[in-house]
Length: 319
Image 1 (cartoon, rainbow, N blue to C red):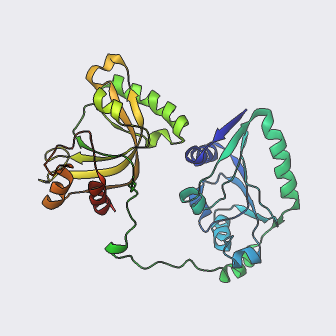
Image 2: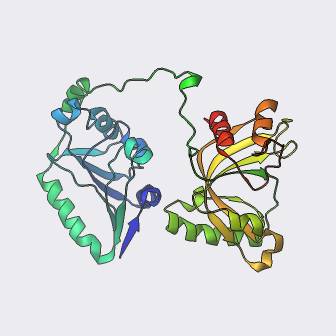
Image 3: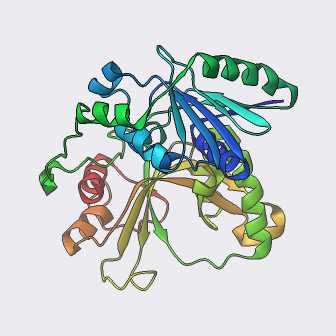
């Protein structure tokens, strides 16, 4: 049986299989500087990679990373011109695009396929062939190569004016919503869990990353669309002691969700995913800027789509 794994589910599945397996053969084209932190290595682990003096000098593969694996009693083999990425466990295998590196887990978008049953046999055969042609790398050789490995440059601390800009869209729909504490019932929690699994497959997002804006009401539920951006505003006394309240966001909306007629007023909710989440207390001046509508009068934030001037204010605050 083959199961497709998108970016969020791929590393979840790799870590799950690694924890439950007694053996692992990791065939990875490139090796990062801290592979032991990327994936838990079972007692019987073997790593095959395109680790040569040339790839180390170019910073493509890390001899230091290989030495970290040796300290954990993990054998490291060299296979020249290798570009395959295969993770073979006791009874299952993952064929994917992901290398054994933090860059693959944190920055790159990866995908793969989980194989089980009879489909693992040809993968096991191919891994055995690669292993037969590979060469064991000695610790002394890796130490010599590590001296020529380029060091990662530590960037200077950026000033506040050069901080990464908040990912709020320059155009599009952004909502500023008053937020309040909500007591969740067991029936509501179970309904959300079921909906989170459905949304996870539809939007390629891990179910545990999905958050909820509860009891939003039918009117707001009908107006908010998929991919809209949401900033939550906790008013004074609601999760904050600040007189001006607290802004929390930005979130991306996965869409309105109907949890069922039995939940009554809590029936409608918004499924949201955090995007570089920040929490800040706005000043009195910025509070007024966010409260003013297009006609210049102060308005409530509840379910209000903000204009471009207010989007710029939010970007400045949350960046």
